[in-house]
Amino acid sequence: MMYTVASVFLLFSVGFPQLKTFPKRCRYLGSLLFVAYEFCLSLSIGNANNAQQAIEVGMVNYLWPTFTLIAAIILLCWTATRSRR
Image 1: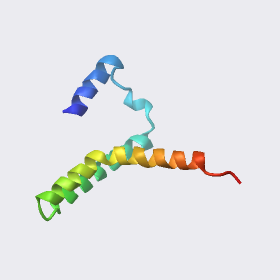
Image 2: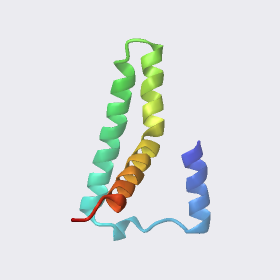
Image 3: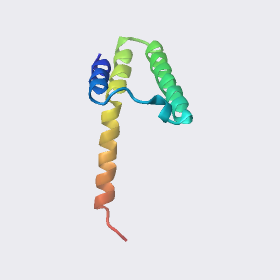
């Protein structure tokens, strides 16, 4: 629901994107990666042994962008503060 509402806001503020301006390779690769992501998520939830594991998979799916940002910030701070030789 959140993605649908955000898409409607984007359509009204920016307009519909011209998909033909994107390279075909980018469109195909993006579509393939999206399908693979959804397939892996459904497969991992389906292979959960109990409800707790299914909830854990859902939480990791929901929070992975946050984890990625935290790791990037930690890496940025580490590279900025390490001693230069």
